[in-house]
Image (cartoon, rainbow, N blue to C red; front, side, top):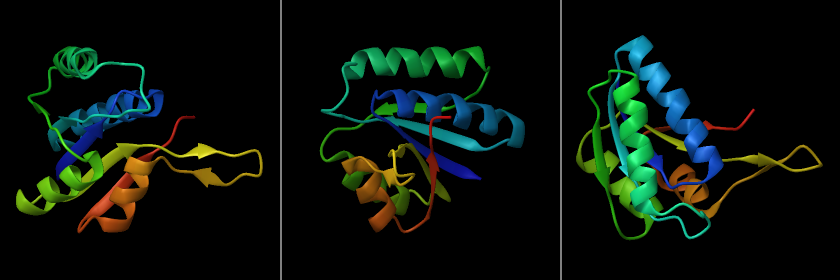
Length: 124
């Protein structure tokens, strides 16, 4: 499966990174990691890129890691469509005290606009 993972630096996107890399290794997925701007994250894109590259290297996975700019959700959707990805994986979805999922703006945009399946990786 050809998977596009969007990572913006939030804790949930770091969880998605680890889970998606593990899945790619186990299933033989072709993985591309897109580091996106996330104004809600304390981590800089450079720090996120370093963490992604370390995680991929530790897993001995041959994954394409790229930095994308612009509206994160739009860019992920565009790349998935233009490059024929089978799935977009993103972190997100904090559970509210009432048991409902609260989505961030990037995750919500991707879920509502993606032309392919979206895997929402939530923190445990």
